[in-house]
Length: 286
Image (tube, rainbow, N blue to C red):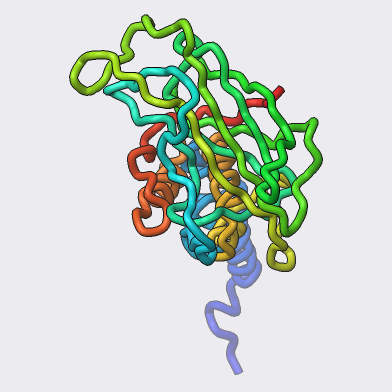
């Protein structure tokens, strides 16, 4: 049988094989370059937003513990102190859950307050801790005032023993402005200085937490742990953990939104008037 013209052409199949190999090599080289091409880095804000959005768990929300009696007010209470109320700022207020005793699983919980008074407007800020049973005083000391009004955390004093499970503690915060009544900007809504007590009180009970959930004083918590704090009535741990996240990422809009929603929960928290207040962070007690 006669050979075909193609078969008769010397080197034809060699050229076909070479061309095919060249095409395959080029395709593989292009794919390798595409894989090796560096991806555009996310901005710090976008990276934090992705990290927050990828955290597992339901959105944080607070469920108060069972009501055991008349709770302390979240607003200014007591009769000690001599500070004036600012007409353009919220009053001295405790960041505690609405209408109920607040719980913690932390050995050393942080007490959060909104303090409208600065170093230029007050002379002393004092923390007092008592055992609720018998009103026995456990601690009395001062803590520093900020250079600006805002939300500040007062850690459990290092000189005081850790909290004990089953124990209820009452705390007091007193701001003294004695001798500083002439400070500028202090006025009532009518324009004349009106003295109001600068004193707060609150309750915290140490309880046993759910298995596998540590207190906010032990390690940084993600949104999943924060949601579990809220579901387990652990206000002090919840607000501390969320505040720590916000302080670590002050420009993160998702964390700011969650903070506003938590404080603005009128049924369970009732602190919407502080949702936009500056978060100053924690200060040490003497």
